[in-house]
Image (cartoon, rainbow, N blue to C red):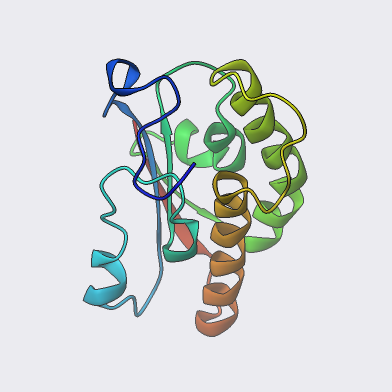
Length: 142
């Protein structure tokens, strides 16, 4: 899907309701935080933002950031090593979602922008944890 494009199925299937995941870290600048407000983009993991609309299961975000969904306030510090360990299954779920929910056919490559966004998100969390010495805080808004 191209950046800022509507989900497959056209404008009648478009929904702003969904899951938003934000990574927050010590020393995060206002510019870094503002970069996370992407208008519901599904391709901005590189700035610490993930998005899944409520079009149907599976939800890769719920697997990747399970602790944030389980907490009473939607926030959890998740070590980057845990996110990295979960990444292969997260990618599998994201591809399954593309097939089941959006009707994608054929092979979905790992560098597909919607799949790559999960990789970029985990890599950002790893980098910020190395820089700060602390796990990032993951916020799930749903």
